[in-house]
Amino acid sequence: MLSYRHGFHAGNHADVLKHSVLTLILDYLKQKNKPYWFIDTHAGAGKYSLESEFSNKTSEYVNGIGKIFHDKKKPSALSKYIEVIRNLNDGDQLKQYPGSPWIASQIISHEDKIRLFELHPTDLTSLLHALGKKQNTKIYGEDGFQGLKALIPPPPKRGLVLTDPSYEIKNDYIKVVESLKDSLKRFKTGIYMVWCPLIDRSEPLAMLNQLKKLNVEEWLYVSLSIAKSTDDIGMFGSYLFIINPPWKLKEELEEIMPYLSKQLGLNGHGSYEIEAKTS
Ligand code: SAM
Image 1 (cartoon, rainbow, N blue to C red):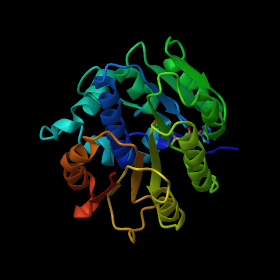
Image 2 (cartoon, rainbow, N blue to C red):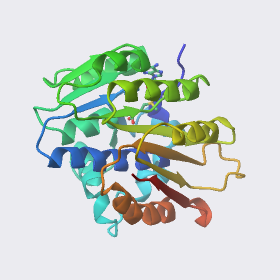
Image 3 (cartoon, rainbow, N blue to C red):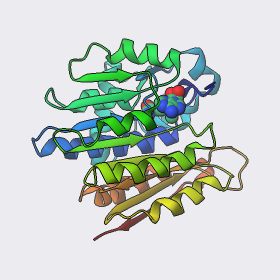
Image 4 (tube, rainbow, N blue to C red):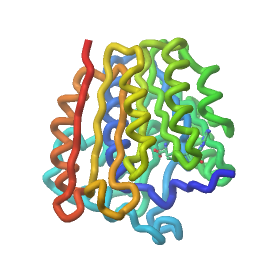
């Protein structure tokens, strides 16, 4: 039984990292003017009210998107991400926050396809409500690790797969690596983006070591921490591991990460890392 609900965490520091990078990758794919697919194996509810009982309980967004949304000195590489949030909110008041499916729906065009997997029945209902009527979108109430196998390679042979589990089941760390190994056999040239929390446990870094050993020519690792690992705040940061990253992404990360770590860091303890393997 899944108990994780993303609504408690929507717009927090981890979402800011994940969604700003997601926006950059989708924007890059769009520039080529050839169709592509976006597959989200763990889609969540699509979009979230920041005034809901979930969000009010934790107010995690206050220390996330809340710290950058109104700031006038943001790096230009964050413009598209902020524009998607502004459009969802009809302007300046931050009342709603987009999930990865919503962000994709705002960036990709009619010829592109969106494929979303969500297992939690309540979030699935919200997701269907938010995006179920879109012509280019299919939503599956199935296991995303399993469902992905039937969708790749996508017909245009171009696409981004986001794997963003909640890791409430510890097996998820293993499944992520297994899923990538299988996916790379089916669709070697795809772009893959994996999200992982940084918490005081061994699994996130053990998984990172496994990811770095995958047989791929290019990857990009980026992490954002808002506190020291010894601070008692639970998830003190998160990382993304991107396989076959767009060529400009590292440069863009070098533009946004100093800003995000400074802006989101608690008591001046924000930090980031960028590491890349290139062919
Ligand atoms: N990708 C979303 C975003 O960025 O807005 C957030 C996703 S949230 C971190 C993870 C979601 O995966 C939860 O809504 C959970 O119910 C769902 N989930 C957990 N295990 C799953 C599985 N095996 N297949 C599909 N969805 C799953």
